[in-house]
Amino acid sequence: MNEQNFDVAARYDFLCRALTKDSDADTLAYHADEQLNKLNHHINHDLVALARQDSPDGFTDILKNLNSELIRLREFCEFPDLATKAVVAVGGRFSAGKSSFLNTLLGKKQLVVEIDPTTSLPTYLLKGDSDNIIAINLFHNKISLSHDEFLSLTHDEKDKYGSQVGSVLSAVFISDGQFPWQNLALLDTPGYTKPDEALNNQRTDEDIARLQLNAANFIIWLVSAEDGVIKEDDLAFLSGLNATIPKLVLINKADKKTPEEVEQITTLTKQTLKGHGINVIDVLPVSRKKQDYPLDAIMGYFDQWNQTATEPRFAKNFAKQFGSYQQHLESAIEKHSKQLSLANQMIAISDDGEMDTIATTIKNNIARQITDWQTTLAQLEQLKQEFFATFNQLAIAFGIQSPTNNANKESAMSDLATNEPTTIAKSIQEMDIQSRKQIASSESLSDEQQIALAKDYSIVVHRALASNPKLCEAAQMLLLEQKKARPNNLGSTL
Image (cartoon, helix red, strand yellow):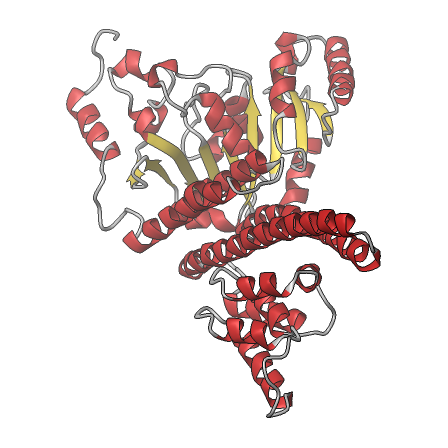
């Protein structure tokens, strides 16, 4: 640590505030934190346990995407003003000039503070009713920062102050009444090439940068003109980001090179990105000397993004990941249902006893596999319903639009009540009577499976289903209709 040239008492007070864990005024409401933890349990415990039964090849990506969205949801709950903003994340190598670019873009006088070039925390800049700086600590507590306190959160904080306040903070939000874009929030991410190895955990700069960039609506990637060409590390990092997020690449510090060199670097960068299969909107030079490299084209993109209607996409993004898992199971059921049908046809037309035995064994194995997949599918549907039941409570509390459970249920019931057989219904119809009876008594059945079984012709299946304590309303209605239509003297006909 350098020779003491700061107020030790003030630094100690700052550290104590940064470590605050219990504050009724600033901490997330207990019930909200509890619900977020429930969502985390559903993803990282319940879903992982379900995946041990059967999961798609891309399950790792599904799990990663769910966790990324959950972290962003928590962040939005902590700072609700961010929920209606389109996030433009600025990324690049350490000291690529990300913070300096933001100062150039906005003008230093428009910011509450001048962003330090070595900011070590993800920092959001957005329009606010008042000028203030708020940090979120690892206990999800909000902390007000002064100008000087924010500027002290650099990579060399430990050397300067003998403290590591930045290591207990997860993000900083700068609200500025003069911020030019009502619907945007700019995010200054840490440089990914200089992780703080002393932390010895997953909160390295690279992890933080990747997480934040993948959660953004748009990405601006800065490449230093002094490097002469986009680096392999940059290409590898960009390749690992979500390909669906629009990306604008900027050649920063263009004033360090001649105009001819800048043009060559820009052209070569375009070619290199294309050669690596990285799609970008454009590659443009930029400099603090605006007269040499005007910001008109860049500002045009920001103005365009600002016009985009933005609303929280949490529900859609979560549902997309569950849908990928569901599609895998439904495809497996459909494929094996066709095989089951072929096995039944073989048995029907065969007059060879040995062939019948073999075909029956194959049929039973296929039927068991289908039953297992259907059980997993039902469990996935149950988990999805529990997940969104918790999510909807958060959505209501924080004003995030989300489909209600009732709307989803009414839509599902409308589809399921039709006479058009679904994939699940077809697979159930292909099973033998004992398999259908066994499934009907399972408490893990989905509503769709129950409705398919309620339409079964067998009274034995109906009785097993009627005794199911988790019987849904739609299936109950169908069973009552079946009972009314049945002759009074009809016995247990199969």
